[in-house]
Length: 343
Ligand SMILES: Cc1cc2nc3c(=O)[nH]c(=O)nc-3n(C[C@H](O)[C@H](O)[C@H](O)COP(=O)(O)O)c2cc1C
Image 1 (cartoon, rainbow, N blue to C red):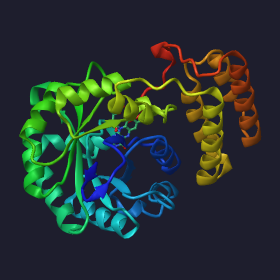
Image 2 (image 1 turned 90 degrees about the horizontal axis):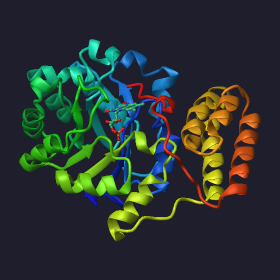
Image 3 (image 1 turned 120 degrees about the vertical axis):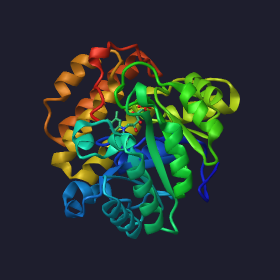
Image 4 (image 1 turned 90 degrees about the vertical axis):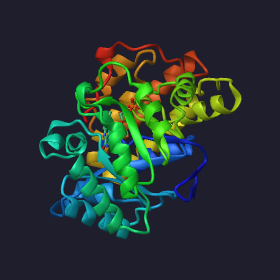
């Protein structure tokens, strides 16, 4: 796929997810079939540029092009400054967050709260596009603030007028949170009106669903978030299905054992071991959720506080799985057993 002047392997994008899509995870998803990945959002507050978290989020060492950074904020000047700062630090695409429903972000009138103020949307988009004239700027939104004010089509027009180069739509309003189903008909209506690429997002969890969403929306690309947590190989599964109409066999236990161990090493290296062990717990939990014996394993694993113990526990768990099956056999999980979104 050609996207904003870059050549991508396919039209399957990794959704930005704060606390999840760090550099190790983005790189892994791309290795396992994603065409493109956007970094977790970074603040537009320059006072925080020096914080360890913001610096880590701006670390793109060794990441394949195009490097895309998402910025969040509510002040046109600060957002412009953030865009310039990130371009100076390697961003090749700037994505603007107008979809985040988190209270902390919305109270600051950023994220999805901006959808309630169309003139401010226009001022932010124009200012950011002007600030980085050689860098494509894209926008990510929800369908509106609430069901009574689904103004995504109007935001599309403002975006196009402002020089935004692509629009991602999570098919829910802010008020919907993550409840109910993504509205693909709204995304289809936006796509029908759009002169820029439209990326459909929300609830894409399988190869079949991916095809259904592409057909229902006519979108140029799909963006996948939660379903890729602990399943980075979902991208190659979707890619294969879209190309052939056939499902890939589930991955072999020994392959994913190796993928997870390598992922852990990247996480320890990226965060340092102490923080890395904590970050790794969440990923291990996602990889193993739904596998035989995982509930007891995760309880035990969450008490381990050093990397060597974590590696050993993962080894033991996967070796026990390999003794039972050659391929991973995920069972449906109880919703109460799923880590909910944080943003
Ligand atoms: C843990 C988590 C963190 C998220 N952080 C961001 C973010 O930083 N920026 C953003 O635009 N969306 C964020 N999102 C929203 C996702 O990008 C995506 O729009 C949403 O999860 C719907 O897609 P899905 O159904 O494929 O997960 C986040 C979602 C989750 C679950």
